[in-house]
Length: 281
Image 1: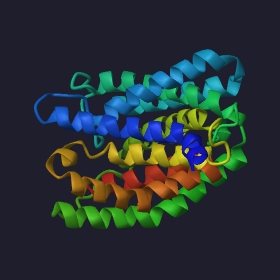
Image 2: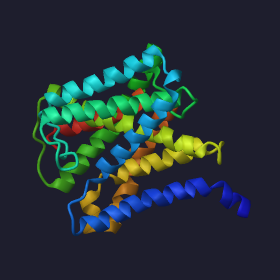
Image 3: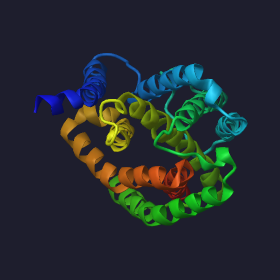
């Protein structure tokens, strides 16, 4: 028993640290203006990715650098012209589309470099485009779209019920382009970089289970980071809604990223937001 507890000590410490961020931030938010959960975890993840990249940049290939720069450029350029996607002001300071474009593009590129450095060490998620494996890239994208479409329709129906207003059709082109913002940024940060960082932390203590334990932690962080206000108003409701979202949307993304690559998880995420934007939610 003691040996098993010792084996999972790192996992328990990581879990406690993550919970502490949520609890402390929520307690402070009751009386003070504090950063949003997504901002906090994005900063922590990008910082970790930068450290990993600086220590292991010699592992990176030309395709890795090109992929990271391209992802950052796509996010930055898209954010500069976004009309349907409006992110929260980062740390309450970065507000304009141009400022958000620079920040989101930079964070995406740095997180991608960290994730790629970890990938070259045998990490849990592959980015097939970095290896110019277009067959696997296309296959992953198509599978992600196929798995995501039914859940995207469920999501629109649920939003219509919970928000109480009818569908208002928006430009499909704007919806598709703007949906790349949450899809690419969140998947690169949480599904690629954070999962990889947690895997690095766990692989020595629980090598056979590190992939899925790290994936579980990254999925929970990603899901629950959306509930800043709800944690203040009704913590139990936030916990329940986060669990439902994790089961319906988090688990598929996790499996797609692991089995089919990051592109597949991005495609799954993209179609959720594209459907939401085009219907006016």
